[in-house]
Image (cartoon, rainbow, N blue to C red):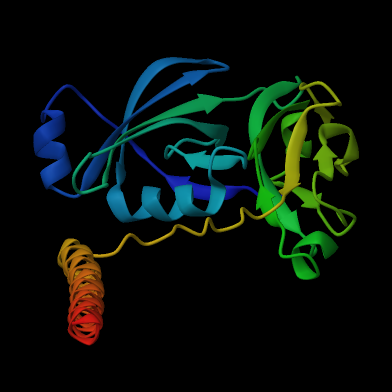
Length: 239
């Protein structure tokens, strides 16, 4: 396993961490195997490069200027909440002869038929797993092959992961790490007419009703007039 190289130097109490950061350095602490709270400092660009390459699951070869280089893991990294710059780092020195426990990210590989053919959605409940192994066997990531997920609801569990030799996962084998979800159907919402349109429609309906009533009243009046004329004619004929 290839380690990521990183050069650091010893740090004294002076200057203060704030001053150190302004000069382009990052304060660090080393603890773990054969180390207990050793204060160090590192060039900002160098530690950023090392972290981007190693993450927290790849060994870093720490060069302190001594005869022996120290295998470590990035244990904790503090970043500025606004600038997102690294402002502090903790390194954990490992014993290469003893097993360690570490979080290793999952890497999605393959294409799920349920996504390609059914427009399913890939959901990742767990994006990493906890592994136990010797430091030399620690993988940078673990592939999660989803090419066998062909239906909605299909899952990939911890038991379905392909692990490197000498690596065991601490989570239960039935733990779901990937699942295929059916896409949600869009709801069709009926659009209510605008307030003005509703008033206008009501006015038109009222006008139409009034017009109908007027025509009916006029027709009734005509019929009544005809009846009166006929009555007069009948009376005149009798005389």
